Length: 207
Image (cartoon, rainbow, N blue to C red):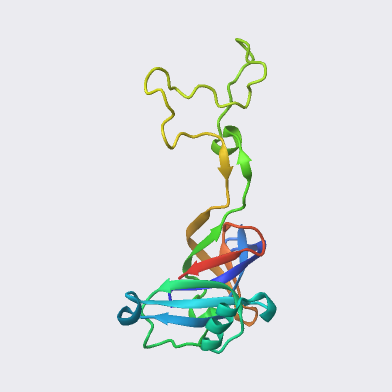
């Protein structure tokens, strides 16, 4: 199985074998239910769809209820497809647990949605220093971007120019995080370092 769906619990720290304090993130990963198996013959590509996190019946739409009933499971909040050919191994309704995918000492990629920061200026968003000293009349421009560099040519702002705008709330992948500890009885995995998103946000763990 190439991956698993999880939820960010929070951060902590553990002491390594060399006595150093290692910052870690605690993630609740699985159990996930197989709700769809896609094949090349039927769908044009091979993938397996996993579902995670219980949801009450009244909050699920009628099409989703029917989708989950086919797999023989209750409605779930998060659905993710993992590209892989598991038609011969997995079938509808199968449960994928943490220990089936992740083990201590391994490395995982974690995909999540970063915290949204709203509309931010260039100092916060791109770490500009601002205009600088209060000379030549610049008494109220300390955090402004300054000149864009466009005069008679090209008479426009180039696409991709670093300017103020929406910051955060983007899909972010952090690669090769070491798995410090696996607690299967609580479906918890402790990985080294930080992962994107706020507490309680959904994460995708790629083994």
